[in-house]
Amino acid sequence: MRYLTDRKRAVGLGAGGSGTQGHWQMMVRSMIMVILTPLFLITFGLGLGGTYEEALAYYSQPIPAIIIALSLIVGLTQLMHEANEAIEDYIHGVTEKLTLVATKALAYTLIVAGLFALVKLAL
Amino acid sequence: MADVNRGNRPLSPHIMIYRPQMTSISSIMVRMSGLALLVLAPLVVWWLLALATSESAFAVIDGLLRSWFGKLVLTGAIWALWYHTLGRLRHVIWDFGYCLDVNTSENMGRAMFIGATVLTVITILVV
Image (tube, rainbow over all chains, first blue to last red; front, side, top):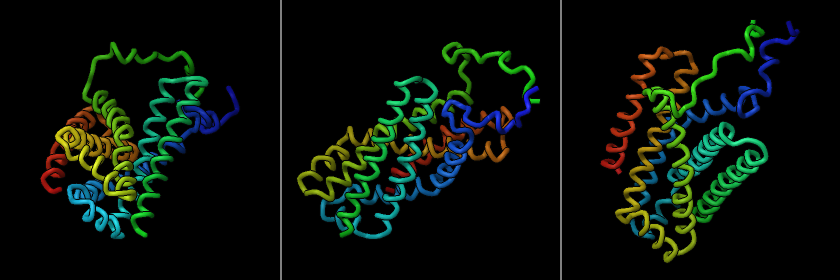
């Protein structure tokens, strides 16, 4: 019999080594995506398909720009964690750490590049 | 007590020899759709960056996305995004303690495939 509470025994365990925090954040993003996915698909679909000038005018408007900015932030963070979950499950050791870092670098670069484009379009 | 029988529990069979079921297939597909979307996400960012850069840069990616192959990829991406959203919604429902029995879970798996397909058709019709 060890004098540890069940909770303490669980701290730092799981494939990701971060207990339940990652799980709860995944839940939060999942709930946000239920609203954000249709908004993103509708606005991006409307932005796509026109001429260069039409697309420029469309993404200079606040609502399409805000929706796609939120989609980039929440969506890519979600996909980054999805990939990291898979990595934590199947890759181990130094390769795991390096792959996790590479995925994060890719996702954050995409987010910032997309936001930069939106800022330029808004100005 | 949580101390009981630690480290002496039956291991789950290897995924390759485990009989495929609606629950496992629909769950694996959530991961696959997420990974596919991460691979395709650069297309959206590329389109935005090109739009913010110049008309000639825009023409390249816009032409690519609007070619028949681009449309095929985008249709797949729309399906994957809907499927992933529904799959993650299923996890939220489970996490809140609902629909945990096998029958309902299998029905939710079926609903995810059907729902994603119906929503993809609606998306293409609307947009």
